[in-house]
Length: 463
Image (cartoon, rainbow, N blue to C red; front, side, top):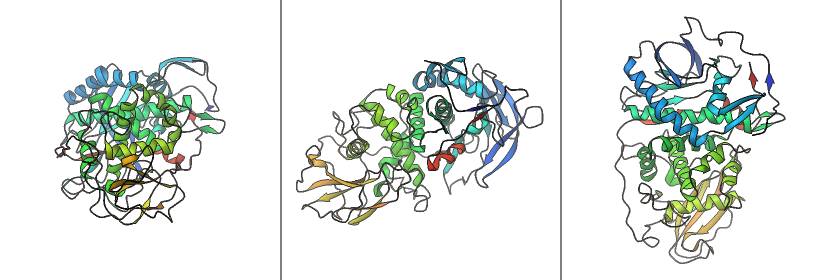
């Protein structure tokens, strides 16, 4: 790769011990997500691995053996899979050569050739048997930069309660892969998505989609995400809003309607990025993360058979209803995805509010009147989606094609009759997967990325 030049402020080389808190390098800054403030975590180094060091909050109850298990899983499996799937290779920054993006992230951080993994009880809103969504881990780009409260390390935070305490350790491994992609994505943005004004970080949904894909790369399909989509939540009162169109494109935009709406985003973005892979191949993930684009165009450029976002979005939304095993309107007969079917509401209004990217389905007995819709609302008949011809007793998809993730909701028209069974489309049956019984994992969105909510470049200060 040719040498790259950036409008990034380089102040000086590291001249001090990375600005850590006192107590013999055992102090870390962490985020309290209940108060939105930072606090000091005292930790001890429990295990030194090949590619990582594992620290644990003092008093967390984490044993050296547990730390060793996490380090070994990272060193022997997660690191290799993630670098192979997502990392750009053999590039230069400031005349320095790097073989992969994790080496670059370490250079931005503490330059010890290892990822710092901090195990702690992340302060979130989890309440056992009351609010079962919990923050399983997070990455903060500020730790790689000259930011206030920076730890000046390439590091990832992993939860210890309910993670590890009540949740199988495998879920912690999945979270580590998920957050590692965020770290790689942030670092790749510095290399690939630079402008004269600064660096553009990827839109939330693209970054989260790649992290959802990272979990699949590490351990295969997530029944937790698939089940949530299939069941529109679960049967224990934890309802989602997928049946009302909620999905990932405008991330976390329906929290005022349901305390579990964010889980809809994770479930739908997981399926969307699985569909992208099944329609192409696994290299689509590296194409997206290394794109010069930071928004939907990064995905569109990787899917060369689609001319615009409207066509791509429409096809995926249709695939969630039709789920044909052989075409773009389904999941290619994937063993774990071939039976999914988008949940539908028991009743549907003739006028619905749809945010960008959202879509709903209704049955059409007679050709409907769709006057008065928003300018970004489209309708398509799924029985004859290629010609978009009306056929009695068909299913109509109503969706918002707007590519602006800050766009307002618009009115879409339906027939007022909920979509029915899928039997007219496919011959094989469908089944509902068994529910997961443990708490639901969510991540803590990269805090520095919040600056890009208005799509403004950030100036990156590197010491």
